[in-house]
Length: 187
Image 1 (cartoon, rainbow, N blue to C red):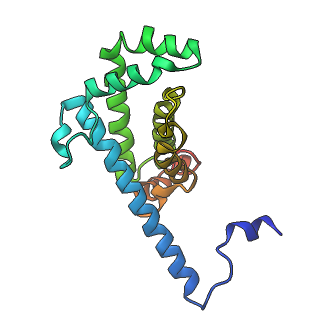
Image 2: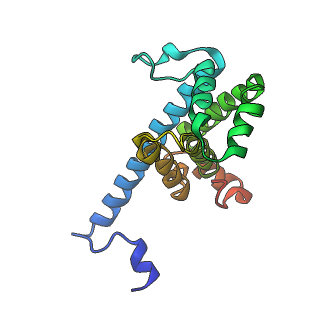
Image 3: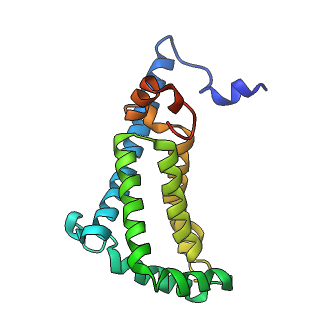
């Protein structure tokens, strides 16, 4: 089987089917990109400006102090002692800096995903931020470590690999206007 055969959707039902599947894929990536962008954006706003009331369900957004409490609790039983010490001895005592960096990172990832600008790079950043929270839970002995955060960082990885901002996003316009930006992971 050729590599081209592995990346095509396979046989089509009729002449318009391939175009329809292309449009549906584009809409699916748009929906996934914007919804994940809103999650990052609202959490960034919550951390930076205390806007945890943006979401109608109490407790959905993690604010500045909540993020500090979560990372502190997560690493208490972490099996990798140097990582545990890094979090407890460097990140948490300097939360004034690192907490704001987390909020700014979430805000930038969220804006980029919603607008479809620099989507691959920002989706990778979102993937790494979420994967870090997953990694920090190692040693908790619960099912959240195994599966919960995968539902957040794997879609971000998929958005990055698909260059999802090229579909109904600013990445397409940026790539057309600035040829130097046509390379992955920029657009």
